[in-house]
Image 1 (tube, rainbow over the protein chains, first blue to last red):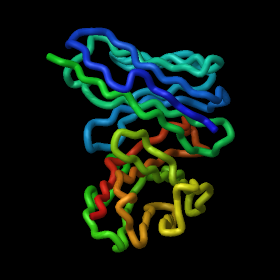
Image 2 (cartoon, rainbow over the protein chains, first blue to last red; image 1 turned 120 degrees about the horizontal axis):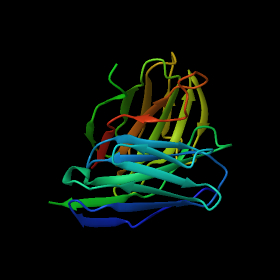
Image 3 (cartoon, helix red, strand yellow; image 1 turned 90 degrees about the horizontal axis):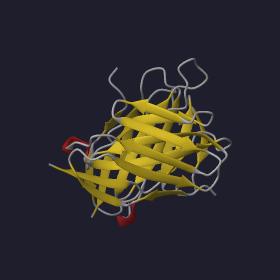
Image 4 (cartoon, rainbow over the protein chains, first blue to last red; image 1 turned 60 degrees about the horizontal axis):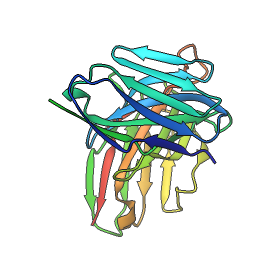
Length: 113
Length: 117
């Protein structure tokens, strides 16, 4: 059974800091990994999608890396801003599980002005 | 088309009542998914459709839950005889499949929050 763990569960940083969120998964037979952002009471916004054959993806101040063999992904946020405050979720799609995603519990990020 | 649409956004009901949620996926996305999310947790998979066929159901989907996608477009999720433990956010997502646009990426709606009193 695939299990996804995100560390830390919560993080509070001052504005301007660079930060790293971690995601680990137990079954390396994944099809892809997706990072999402979720604001309180809202749905999920897709940030980055990394296919299993890729090592990293970048979008603006965000960079996500994938080490499939070790079961790890990181989301790097550069020059954090108060507007980045949200919960960040990673989810993996297994190769043989159809289309279901398995999510971690998320990292709740607070960026203080 | 602005994305996945869910209705209602919020529903408060008394225990024992039936509720129904609707999801309109992104046009031409033939895969549609339902997830459930409780406070402080990540979303959990419930079921998914490819066109009108329901291809997979989670064990979380008890016999009080039923999902349909009759014409391969919008979907409904009905919960019968609601219980307080059903209180959660119900999220719908869609993705293209078997097309040039298919990267395996899922696009989520804003969710339908259910509160059972």
